[in-house]
Image 1 (cartoon, rainbow, N blue to C red):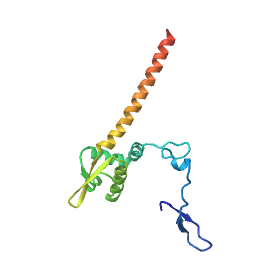
Image 2: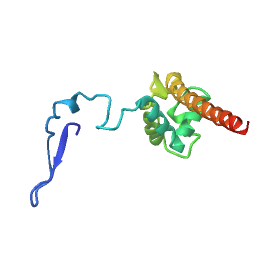
Image 3: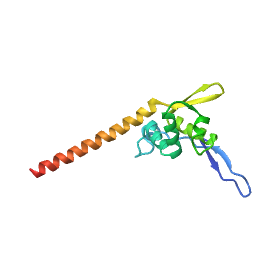
Image 4: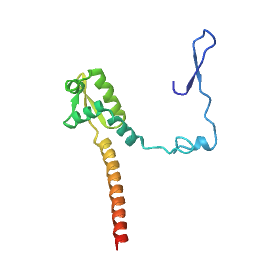
Length: 147
């Protein structure tokens, strides 16, 4: 339904789908680096990855895949969820850039994507560096005040 809106039907009529009006032209149409007037875009690779790992089942699947590549059935056998549920969680992890898959016979083998994990690691490293620098600045300021 991308690019369409749902229009309520009249009395006793079902709703209809009609095309969405075109986007306005001008400065808003040219703004590709923001979601709205004041919301900047976020690197979806990183933000989506953290959100995907925020689900306990997906985190458990990622932990299983850290042991090595596995098929859906192998993963599902170690979790209290069905194969279809594992497949859905794997799709979310794949869309987040954290998992890749390859065909092997009539099944797919999933493994962690080092590029997606590297992006998350870089973000953690950045947070850690900023935190340590802030701590250092506070400690140095307190030392100066004591002298």
